[in-house]
Image 1 (cartoon, helix red, strand yellow):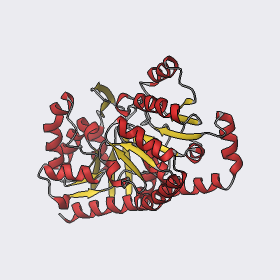
Image 2 (cartoon, helix red, strand yellow):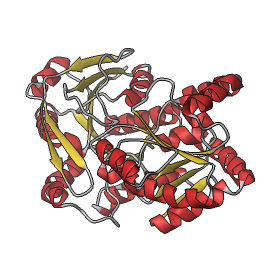
Image 3 (tube, one colour):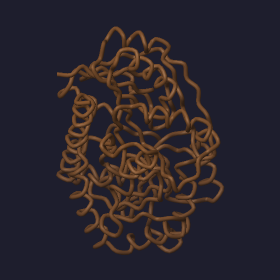
Image 4 (cartoon, one colour):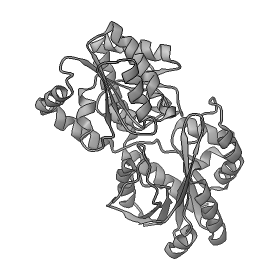
Length: 380
Protein backbone atom coordinates (compact mmCIF):
# COMPACT_ATOMS: atom_id res chain seq x y z
CA UNK A 1 0.00 0.00 0.00
CA UNK A 2 1.10 3.55 -0.69
CA UNK A 3 2.51 5.49 2.24
CA UNK A 4 0.36 8.62 2.56
CA UNK A 5 0.57 11.56 4.96
CA UNK A 6 -2.56 13.59 5.63
CA UNK A 7 -2.06 17.03 7.21
CA UNK A 8 -4.99 18.72 9.00
CA UNK A 9 -5.11 21.50 11.59
CA UNK A 10 -7.25 19.32 13.85
CA UNK A 11 -8.85 15.88 13.85
CA UNK A 12 -12.60 16.56 14.13
CA UNK A 13 -14.79 13.70 15.35
CA UNK A 14 -16.80 13.55 12.12
CA UNK A 15 -13.66 12.85 10.07
CA UNK A 16 -12.59 9.80 12.09
CA UNK A 17 -14.74 7.26 10.15
CA UNK A 18 -13.28 8.53 6.86
CA UNK A 19 -9.70 8.28 8.13
CA UNK A 20 -10.38 4.72 9.27
CA UNK A 21 -11.82 3.83 5.87
CA UNK A 22 -8.85 5.38 4.07
CA UNK A 23 -6.45 3.47 6.33
CA UNK A 24 -7.87 0.19 5.06
CA UNK A 25 -6.79 1.14 1.53
CA UNK A 26 -3.44 2.87 2.16
CA UNK A 27 -0.68 3.23 4.75
CA UNK A 28 -2.10 6.48 6.15
CA UNK A 29 -0.62 8.69 8.85
CA UNK A 30 -2.58 11.73 10.00
CA UNK A 31 -0.66 14.75 11.29
CA UNK A 32 -2.93 17.09 13.26
CA UNK A 33 -2.45 19.82 15.81
CA UNK A 34 -3.20 20.39 19.47
CA UNK A 35 -5.75 23.18 19.01
CA UNK A 36 -8.96 23.02 21.00
CA UNK A 37 -11.96 24.65 19.33
CA UNK A 38 -15.32 25.55 20.82
CA UNK A 39 -17.49 24.79 17.84
CA UNK A 40 -18.50 21.67 15.95
CA UNK A 41 -14.94 21.23 14.66
CA UNK A 42 -13.68 20.31 18.10
CA UNK A 43 -10.46 18.28 18.15
CA UNK A 44 -11.05 14.58 18.79
CA UNK A 45 -9.11 13.82 21.99
CA UNK A 46 -8.26 10.19 21.24
CA UNK A 47 -9.03 8.91 17.72
CA UNK A 48 -8.23 5.29 16.98
CA UNK A 49 -8.25 2.94 14.01
CA UNK A 50 -5.52 4.73 12.06
CA UNK A 51 -2.02 6.10 12.56
CA UNK A 52 -2.12 9.52 14.10
CA UNK A 53 0.57 11.94 15.26
CA UNK A 54 -0.59 14.95 17.21
CA UNK A 55 1.92 17.76 16.65
CA UNK A 56 2.49 20.82 18.78
CA UNK A 57 0.80 23.74 17.03
CA UNK A 58 0.80 27.51 17.19
CA UNK A 59 -2.72 28.76 16.55
CA UNK A 60 -4.35 32.06 15.75
CA UNK A 61 -7.97 32.80 14.88
CA UNK A 62 -8.99 35.63 12.59
CA UNK A 63 -12.52 36.99 12.77
CA UNK A 64 -14.27 38.09 9.60
CA UNK A 65 -17.76 39.49 9.08
CA UNK A 66 -19.43 36.09 9.05
CA UNK A 67 -17.07 33.58 10.61
CA UNK A 68 -13.94 32.78 12.55
CA UNK A 69 -10.99 31.44 10.55
CA UNK A 70 -8.49 29.40 12.59
CA UNK A 71 -4.96 29.18 11.19
CA UNK A 72 -2.33 26.85 12.58
CA UNK A 73 1.36 26.08 12.20
CA UNK A 74 3.20 22.88 13.12
CA UNK A 75 6.84 23.93 13.71
CA UNK A 76 8.09 20.32 13.43
CA UNK A 77 6.01 19.29 10.41
CA UNK A 78 8.91 19.35 7.94
CA UNK A 79 10.98 17.03 10.13
CA UNK A 80 8.06 14.66 10.74
CA UNK A 81 7.49 14.40 7.01
CA UNK A 82 11.20 13.80 6.44
CA UNK A 83 11.14 10.96 8.97
CA UNK A 84 7.97 9.37 7.52
CA UNK A 85 9.05 9.72 3.86
CA UNK A 86 5.51 9.60 2.40
CA UNK A 87 4.94 8.87 -1.27
CA UNK A 88 1.93 11.21 -1.32
CA UNK A 89 0.88 14.09 0.95
CA UNK A 90 -2.75 15.23 1.21
CA UNK A 91 -3.24 18.60 2.89
CA UNK A 92 -6.26 20.49 4.14
CA UNK A 93 -6.74 23.71 2.20
CA UNK A 94 -7.09 27.34 3.23
CA UNK A 95 -7.13 26.96 7.03
CA UNK A 96 -3.93 24.94 6.72
CA UNK A 97 -2.24 27.61 4.61
CA UNK A 98 0.82 28.12 6.83
CA UNK A 99 1.54 24.39 7.03
CA UNK A 100 0.98 24.17 3.27
CA UNK A 101 3.96 26.46 2.72
CA UNK A 102 6.11 23.95 4.60
CA UNK A 103 4.51 21.02 2.75
CA UNK A 104 5.04 22.70 -0.64
CA UNK A 105 8.72 23.20 0.19
CA UNK A 106 9.11 19.58 1.30
CA UNK A 107 7.44 18.28 -1.86
CA UNK A 108 9.63 20.47 -4.06
CA UNK A 109 12.84 19.36 -2.36
CA UNK A 110 12.06 15.64 -2.31
CA UNK A 111 9.84 15.30 -5.42
CA UNK A 112 6.81 14.10 -3.46
CA UNK A 113 3.31 14.21 -4.96
CA UNK A 114 1.05 16.70 -3.22
CA UNK A 115 -2.77 16.79 -3.19
CA UNK A 116 -4.82 19.63 -1.72
CA UNK A 117 -8.22 18.88 -0.15
CA UNK A 118 -10.25 22.07 -0.17
CA UNK A 119 -13.77 23.51 -0.10
CA UNK A 120 -13.00 26.20 -2.65
CA UNK A 121 -15.21 29.25 -2.80
CA UNK A 122 -18.66 30.18 -4.02
CA UNK A 123 -17.77 32.92 -6.53
CA UNK A 124 -21.19 34.51 -6.11
CA UNK A 125 -20.34 35.34 -2.50
CA UNK A 126 -18.12 38.38 -1.77
CA UNK A 127 -14.69 37.76 -0.26
CA UNK A 128 -13.75 39.15 3.16
CA UNK A 129 -10.72 41.42 3.44
CA UNK A 130 -8.76 38.57 5.04
CA UNK A 131 -9.64 36.19 2.21
CA UNK A 132 -8.58 38.79 -0.34
CA UNK A 133 -5.26 39.22 1.42
CA UNK A 134 -4.39 35.52 1.40
CA UNK A 135 -6.04 34.58 -1.89
CA UNK A 136 -2.95 35.08 -4.11
CA UNK A 137 -0.93 32.72 -1.91
CA UNK A 138 -3.84 30.29 -1.71
CA UNK A 139 -4.17 30.23 -5.51
CA UNK A 140 -0.44 29.66 -5.86
CA UNK A 141 -0.72 26.64 -3.56
CA UNK A 142 -3.72 25.28 -5.45
CA UNK A 143 -1.92 25.56 -8.77
CA UNK A 144 1.23 23.99 -7.29
CA UNK A 145 -0.59 20.85 -6.14
CA UNK A 146 -0.49 17.82 -8.44
CA UNK A 147 -4.22 17.26 -7.83
CA UNK A 148 -7.12 18.76 -5.91
CA UNK A 149 -9.85 17.01 -3.94
CA UNK A 150 -12.87 19.32 -4.04
CA UNK A 151 -15.60 19.26 -1.41
CA UNK A 152 -18.35 19.88 -3.99
CA UNK A 153 -19.20 20.54 -7.60
CA UNK A 154 -19.22 24.28 -6.91
CA UNK A 155 -15.71 24.00 -5.45
CA UNK A 156 -14.63 22.12 -8.57
CA UNK A 157 -15.98 24.92 -10.77
CA UNK A 158 -14.08 27.48 -8.71
CA UNK A 159 -10.78 25.61 -9.10
CA UNK A 160 -11.45 25.25 -12.82
CA UNK A 161 -12.06 29.01 -13.09
CA UNK A 162 -8.54 29.58 -11.74
CA UNK A 163 -7.16 27.86 -14.81
CA UNK A 164 -6.59 24.51 -13.10
CA UNK A 165 -7.08 21.61 -15.51
CA UNK A 166 -10.27 19.60 -15.01
CA UNK A 167 -8.27 16.35 -15.05
CA UNK A 168 -6.50 17.47 -11.84
CA UNK A 169 -9.80 18.11 -10.00
CA UNK A 170 -11.55 15.26 -8.20
CA UNK A 171 -14.97 15.83 -6.59
CA UNK A 172 -14.90 14.10 -3.20
CA UNK A 173 -18.15 15.30 -1.69
CA UNK A 174 -17.89 16.13 1.98
CA UNK A 175 -19.72 13.43 3.91
CA UNK A 176 -20.01 11.35 7.06
CA UNK A 177 -20.50 7.66 7.83
CA UNK A 178 -23.85 7.28 6.07
CA UNK A 179 -24.05 3.52 6.68
CA UNK A 180 -23.71 4.09 10.44
CA UNK A 181 -26.58 6.60 10.24
CA UNK A 182 -28.75 4.09 8.37
CA UNK A 183 -28.13 1.45 11.04
CA UNK A 184 -28.84 3.86 13.87
CA UNK A 185 -32.06 5.07 12.21
CA UNK A 186 -33.24 1.47 11.91
CA UNK A 187 -32.35 0.86 15.56
CA UNK A 188 -34.31 3.89 16.77
CA UNK A 189 -37.31 3.23 14.53
CA UNK A 190 -37.44 -0.39 15.75
CA UNK A 191 -37.97 0.86 19.31
CA UNK A 192 -40.72 3.53 19.37
CA UNK A 193 -40.25 3.88 23.12
CA UNK A 194 -36.96 5.73 22.49
CA UNK A 195 -38.72 8.43 20.49
CA UNK A 196 -41.62 8.59 22.93
CA UNK A 197 -39.26 8.94 25.91
CA UNK A 198 -37.26 11.73 24.22
CA UNK A 199 -40.39 13.63 23.24
CA UNK A 200 -41.62 13.36 26.82
CA UNK A 201 -38.25 14.48 28.21
CA UNK A 202 -38.28 17.57 25.98
CA UNK A 203 -42.00 18.15 26.58
CA UNK A 204 -42.81 18.13 22.86
CA UNK A 205 -45.19 15.15 22.84
CA UNK A 206 -47.70 16.29 20.21
CA UNK A 207 -45.71 18.97 18.44
CA UNK A 208 -44.15 19.24 15.02
CA UNK A 209 -40.37 19.56 15.35
CA UNK A 210 -37.88 21.67 13.39
CA UNK A 211 -34.26 20.63 13.98
CA UNK A 212 -31.00 22.52 13.58
CA UNK A 213 -27.63 20.86 14.27
CA UNK A 214 -24.40 22.81 13.85
CA UNK A 215 -22.11 25.48 15.23
CA UNK A 216 -23.60 28.51 16.95
CA UNK A 217 -21.64 31.16 15.07
CA UNK A 218 -22.48 34.29 13.12
CA UNK A 219 -22.10 32.68 9.72
CA UNK A 220 -24.61 29.99 10.67
CA UNK A 221 -27.36 32.64 11.12
CA UNK A 222 -29.16 30.79 13.89
CA UNK A 223 -30.67 34.08 15.09
CA UNK A 224 -32.44 34.32 11.72
CA UNK A 225 -33.84 30.83 12.25
CA UNK A 226 -35.20 31.77 15.67
CA UNK A 227 -37.00 34.82 14.25
CA UNK A 228 -38.43 32.73 11.42
CA UNK A 229 -39.57 30.13 13.95
CA UNK A 230 -41.26 32.86 16.00
CA UNK A 231 -43.25 33.97 12.94
CA UNK A 232 -44.27 30.44 11.94
CA UNK A 233 -45.34 29.56 15.49
CA UNK A 234 -47.94 32.33 15.40
CA UNK A 235 -49.68 30.33 12.66
CA UNK A 236 -48.71 26.81 13.81
CA UNK A 237 -48.78 26.87 17.64
CA UNK A 238 -48.00 23.16 18.16
CA UNK A 239 -44.43 23.57 17.00
CA UNK A 240 -40.98 23.19 18.56
CA UNK A 241 -37.48 24.16 17.47
CA UNK A 242 -34.52 22.11 18.66
CA UNK A 243 -31.10 23.74 18.38
CA UNK A 244 -28.13 21.43 18.91
CA UNK A 245 -24.63 22.87 18.91
CA UNK A 246 -22.16 25.17 20.59
CA UNK A 247 -20.11 28.19 19.65
CA UNK A 248 -19.36 31.85 20.15
CA UNK A 249 -22.99 32.96 19.63
CA UNK A 250 -24.56 30.64 22.20
CA UNK A 251 -25.06 33.36 24.83
CA UNK A 252 -26.51 35.76 22.23
CA UNK A 253 -28.97 33.10 21.10
CA UNK A 254 -30.13 32.51 24.68
CA UNK A 255 -30.58 36.26 25.17
CA UNK A 256 -32.61 36.54 21.97
CA UNK A 257 -34.97 33.74 23.03
CA UNK A 258 -35.46 35.28 26.49
CA UNK A 259 -35.90 38.84 25.24
CA UNK A 260 -38.60 37.85 22.76
CA UNK A 261 -40.20 35.39 25.18
CA UNK A 262 -40.17 32.62 22.56
CA UNK A 263 -41.58 29.34 23.82
CA UNK A 264 -40.76 25.81 22.65
CA UNK A 265 -37.34 26.89 21.37
CA UNK A 266 -34.82 24.59 23.05
CA UNK A 267 -31.05 25.09 22.90
CA UNK A 268 -29.64 21.71 23.89
CA UNK A 269 -25.90 22.36 23.55
CA UNK A 270 -23.37 20.17 21.80
CA UNK A 271 -24.38 16.51 21.40
CA UNK A 272 -22.27 13.91 19.59
CA UNK A 273 -23.28 10.52 20.98
CA UNK A 274 -26.96 9.66 20.82
CA UNK A 275 -27.74 12.33 18.24
CA UNK A 276 -29.77 9.95 16.10
CA UNK A 277 -32.88 10.04 18.25
CA UNK A 278 -33.08 13.84 17.78
CA UNK A 279 -33.06 13.43 14.01
CA UNK A 280 -35.70 10.72 14.36
CA UNK A 281 -38.12 12.92 16.32
CA UNK A 282 -37.69 15.83 13.91
CA UNK A 283 -40.11 16.49 11.07
CA UNK A 284 -37.75 18.66 9.04
CA UNK A 285 -34.13 19.76 9.21
CA UNK A 286 -33.08 23.34 8.54
CA UNK A 287 -29.82 25.12 7.83
CA UNK A 288 -30.19 28.92 7.87
CA UNK A 289 -26.59 29.84 7.00
CA UNK A 290 -23.20 28.43 6.09
CA UNK A 291 -23.23 24.72 5.23
CA UNK A 292 -22.58 21.72 7.43
CA UNK A 293 -22.47 17.92 7.36
CA UNK A 294 -25.66 17.74 9.38
CA UNK A 295 -27.50 18.01 6.05
CA UNK A 296 -26.03 14.62 5.09
CA UNK A 297 -27.04 13.24 8.46
CA UNK A 298 -30.61 14.55 8.20
CA UNK A 299 -31.01 12.95 4.77
CA UNK A 300 -29.68 9.65 6.13
CA UNK A 301 -32.44 9.77 8.76
CA UNK A 302 -35.06 10.38 6.07
CA UNK A 303 -35.76 14.04 6.78
CA UNK A 304 -36.52 16.77 4.24
CA UNK A 305 -34.11 19.71 4.41
CA UNK A 306 -34.54 23.45 3.95
CA UNK A 307 -31.22 25.25 3.53
CA UNK A 308 -29.93 28.69 2.59
CA UNK A 309 -27.57 29.14 -0.35
CA UNK A 310 -24.11 28.81 1.20
CA UNK A 311 -20.75 27.33 0.15
CA UNK A 312 -22.13 25.23 -2.70
CA UNK A 313 -22.12 21.80 -1.04
CA UNK A 314 -25.89 22.07 -0.68
CA UNK A 315 -26.31 22.11 -4.48
CA UNK A 316 -24.96 18.58 -4.77
CA UNK A 317 -27.19 17.21 -2.02
CA UNK A 318 -30.47 19.11 -2.21
CA UNK A 319 -32.53 18.60 -5.35
CA UNK A 320 -34.97 21.51 -5.41
CA UNK A 321 -38.49 20.34 -4.65
CA UNK A 322 -37.42 16.69 -4.54
CA UNK A 323 -35.78 16.10 -1.15
CA UNK A 324 -35.90 19.69 0.11
CA UNK A 325 -35.46 23.32 -0.79
CA UNK A 326 -32.58 25.76 -1.27
CA UNK A 327 -33.70 29.29 -0.45
CA UNK A 328 -32.16 32.74 -0.97
CA UNK A 329 -33.58 34.78 1.90
CA UNK A 330 -35.52 34.62 5.17
CA UNK A 331 -38.86 35.13 3.43
CA UNK A 332 -38.33 32.05 1.27
CA UNK A 333 -36.91 30.20 4.27
CA UNK A 334 -40.09 30.85 6.27
CA UNK A 335 -42.38 30.04 3.34
CA UNK A 336 -40.80 26.67 2.55
CA UNK A 337 -40.66 25.56 6.18
CA UNK A 338 -44.33 26.51 6.58
CA UNK A 339 -45.24 24.68 3.37
CA UNK A 340 -43.67 21.49 4.63
CA UNK A 341 -45.13 21.70 8.13
CA UNK A 342 -48.60 21.91 6.60
CA UNK A 343 -48.09 18.93 4.30
CA UNK A 344 -47.22 15.65 6.01
CA UNK A 345 -47.34 13.76 2.72
CA UNK A 346 -44.66 16.04 1.28
CA UNK A 347 -42.53 15.60 4.40
CA UNK A 348 -42.64 11.83 3.94
CA UNK A 349 -42.05 11.83 0.18
CA UNK A 350 -39.12 14.24 0.44
CA UNK A 351 -37.61 12.21 3.26
CA UNK A 352 -37.74 9.06 1.12
CA UNK A 353 -36.17 10.92 -1.81
CA UNK A 354 -33.36 12.11 0.43
CA UNK A 355 -32.61 8.55 1.52
CA UNK A 356 -32.13 7.52 -2.12
CA UNK A 357 -29.89 10.50 -2.90
CA UNK A 358 -27.62 10.24 0.15
CA UNK A 359 -26.74 6.60 -0.66
CA UNK A 360 -24.50 8.01 -3.40
CA UNK A 361 -22.51 10.07 -0.86
CA UNK A 362 -21.20 7.37 1.44
CA UNK A 363 -17.63 6.88 2.68
CA UNK A 364 -16.89 4.17 0.10
CA UNK A 365 -17.48 6.67 -2.68
CA UNK A 366 -15.20 9.27 -1.07
CA UNK A 367 -12.46 6.67 -0.57
CA UNK A 368 -12.73 5.71 -4.26
CA UNK A 369 -12.23 9.35 -5.26
CA UNK A 370 -9.20 9.69 -2.96
CA UNK A 371 -7.68 6.57 -4.52
CA UNK A 372 -8.31 7.94 -8.03
CA UNK A 373 -6.53 11.19 -7.12
CA UNK A 374 -3.59 9.27 -5.66
CA UNK A 375 -3.42 7.04 -8.73
CA UNK A 376 -3.52 10.12 -10.96
CA UNK A 377 -0.60 11.91 -9.28
CA UNK A 378 1.37 8.66 -9.29
CA UNK A 379 1.00 8.41 -13.06
CA UNK A 380 2.38 11.89 -13.73
